[in-house]
Image (cartoon, rainbow, N blue to C red; front, side, top):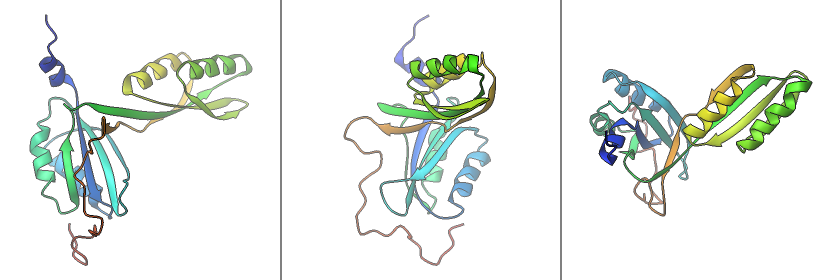
Length: 190
């Protein structure tokens, strides 16, 4: 069996990034479009972008999804400034995880050693628990969590994938500095 790059691309989940207006209801409208098409969002990360008034969203959907169809439909929404599927581009991805573990005097140093091995940080230490933070690609986070399963995980939270195109290229087209991102003032876009 051969592993061509085309076969590998088919099994990789879609990573879709969107630049959206930072307004109430935007996330709901976008998630509704995915739901209407029967897609499961594997992860979703949203945060402020470099432009005031705009947020950047990163969606990860399954590899079997016809993401191109949904991306075209989402691009028609008023709240979306730009959206694109970057799955097959050269990208840098990261995920962050926080893991709270039960610890004792005996296990605390073992957990800290594992954290150091993965370049993770110790965020909090108490007499009976500690919280670790790890950042990296999904494979690194998966491996980290797998090793920690030998101990008692009390809580686990992961951000989901965030992504950028590698190099100097920008993920979204340059927008005029003077453009206001309330494109339809006073008009409800839902």
